[in-house]
Length: 216
Length: 113
Ligand SMILES: [Zn+2]
Image 1 (cartoon, rainbow over the protein chains, first blue to last red):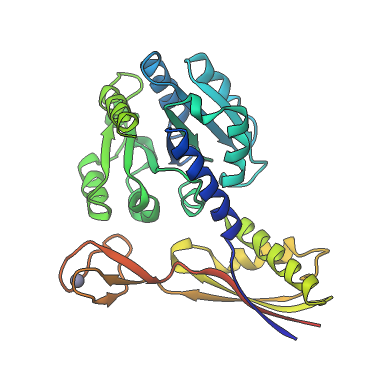
Image 2: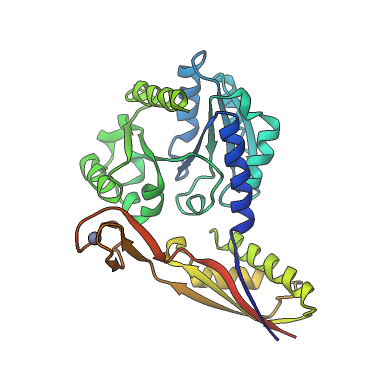
């Protein structure tokens, strides 16, 4: 017997993402899905951001990890609320995991919620979490070919944070080519060139977050 | 990597439907996967073989229909397959496009007894 199904495989996730989206809107929180390769410096960026915005914005971070890394502890020390999700090997967060994390960290008490996705550029791009915006983090130590290899994430993102700028002299990363390529893929992208070490670009990044939170 | 979770969702969908339709053994499953997901057929196949163990789909053949990415220009109406990086309309250069193919992700049908 042949059964015609025609059911979208992401339906369950998309339904839950819709629920999250309504919750974020009602709570007046800006939810940002933060996507990067492993080792891009996402957690350090979150630490610095939480420290710089302490007293100005209430920040929450959902930290997704393949296995425990206790990144949430680092972020809490910097002054943000944090919940860790261990995906037990799953390569992306799902809308349901985020929803469960929100039970621990009520969104109405926050201005900005970062959802720090599991480190890779492919799978997280396919799963809607209900966020308002995706932000990609790209470090100069990763090489220049990321935008052309993974165009989907850069096409869907609202902003890109280029991290570890201080390491530029020690890599063959060509910043101009990278910027040109990012523009080619998505000319609406907001681009921040940053270094957590020297502080470069972090003020612009934080001001931008404040304007997003104010605009909501 | 996300091939695993796509296949997990596929098995749940088919298993649920098989119960409703009184099917004890599934022989073939056909899925449609758009190009944008970047899912590799070999990885889908592997995930299917691993994850169907002890389910109604164990031993079934997975057929994969990969749909190419086709965009439609919002300005001039041209339909085209974009290159990897540049998604702009080759006819008029406009940037506003909608995908008319390549974003599908669903179980088309399955066959069983
Ligand atoms: Zn056109």
